[in-house]
Length: 105
Image 1 (cartoon, rainbow, N blue to C red):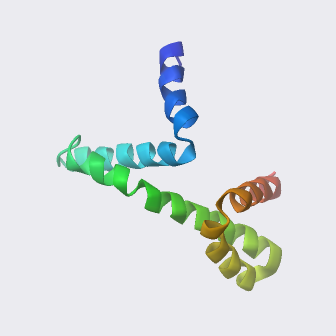
Image 2 (tube, rainbow, N blue to C red; image 1 turned 60 degrees about the vertical axis):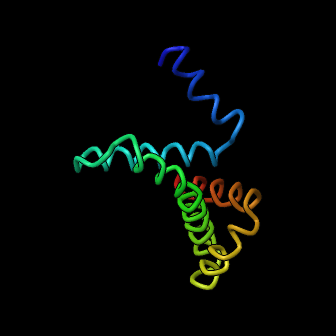
Image 3 (cartoon, one colour; image 1 turned 120 degrees about the vertical axis):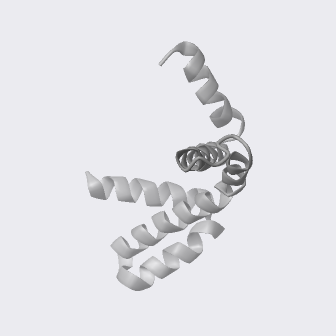
């Protein structure tokens, strides 16, 4: 990757954090799907994907919390993890991703 590409990739993370990155990834995904089906690839589909990026962020956060809760306490833990994940965003996201990655290795 070139230095300019790394710089452009790092700008959203530096000033907006992971939410901006998820929004941009969602927008690119929507634009790619729209382009595949010969819809408007850079217009409304990109905007819709960007706006739905927060929903995707919370969906992924709840899934990570549910997975960690399931590993710790079974099905009741999965439900509790999915519900608590959006409320305790940062600590639960860190614990969930660290726990899941340590379980996978």
